[in-house]
Image 1 (cartoon, rainbow, N blue to C red):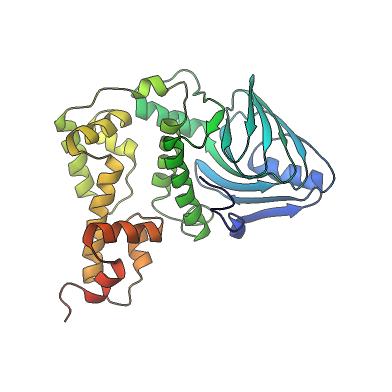
Image 2 (cartoon, one colour):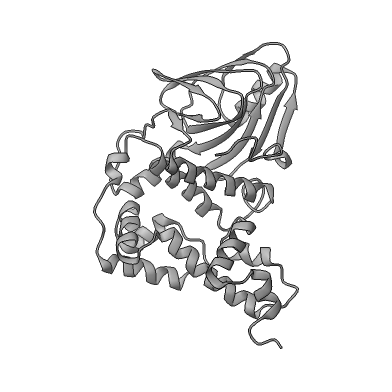
Length: 330
């Protein structure tokens, strides 16, 4: 899971929003990215906020130095997943109380009032998700019009396999932001795909009011074939699961189950496998001075290390070896 042992540096340090010992300044600046709130602090207050914004999802690192008490009331417009990197906190969202540690994160439902106490030394990675965007993704996934807001269990148990997979997605997103490739001021054409994957992954990983609607029947082979043909025709383009489900004429969750039933893998894995083949084609034909990282980013991989590992597993050689040898070079 994400922790200081896995993140040896301050996350998003290249996206510093502010650092201040002035409580009023800190409160106003944090409110500018989140919402208005009451803030009180003990001695030793030294706030730091790093922020990499997206369209519907933002990544944040926040610490206050001292023990603080935070009362934002209802967040209204966004969900906030709070992942402790060190220290701990007491979180109340609605009637639910969560003791947050490096093994237990929290998610704040925007329609429930929140009060928090972060202890001295608490450092958090915060994933902010637009309420409206999550609602739309939940409708696409379930295939139902939702007349009530999605409500999550505020207690996020990080040891669960599904949450560990989602944390891996968060880690990749952090890597992309820190490399200047996505989030922040980057104009990356796969940004909507990254954000949808983060929202979809959290909806599947964390128990919520829509979870019963995400257990559904697999669609027929014809729907899967339509989606597969679309993947092959648009392999180099950004591809959201919601778009793919539209082509297949089914919900996102049905599409995921259909690929697993008929192709033995998830749509995301199928797309990755095909994009590895596309990357190999590029590496065999591009000049030797081409950067492997540019090829990886161009076909939708946001983590060069994982791209190289997946490429070697698929083809038995590193991307740099393929680039050096080419297909027709002596």
